[in-house]
Length: 206
Image (cartoon, rainbow, N blue to C red; front, side, top):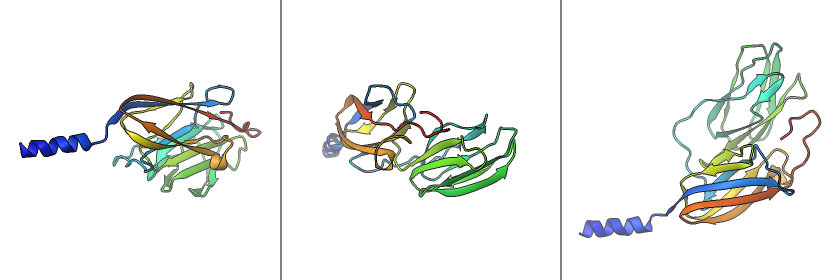
């Protein structure tokens, strides 16, 4: 009985889980914002990243990067295969990851390790119209909004959660805004309104 009582006390002390948290990102006029990255920090701390690592890829196809925004956890490797009939020269001068993949041809590939959190803008030294972004995150609760501006998370601990919303064209320091939400058990829904800059000339639209 004593052991059962201790177990019951621990079970009551364990934080309840929100079954699902849905986040919707919209512009000030109400239009959905796709490819915004939402990262949640329960209790203000990063949620531990999973031990396994899967492969990530940004392809060069039709003189564009695909996808335009890629979300990866810290410690991930990203492949940059070239499927075009022309050569590409991929680079980034970001604080999170500075690298340069010098000219390589069709059906060749290069891989880069991303070991620090942050936003990594990508460009091609040969084709100015090519742009993309890698958002390297340090929390397991990170995701990218879909075409309806929505992203969902499961298993968020109840209590205060810091939310960070990032988009390459968001009007804010570092292209990111920070909010604080409080979740209980069950389902929760949040909506974030953001102001976006227009895409730069020759860049991909959001």
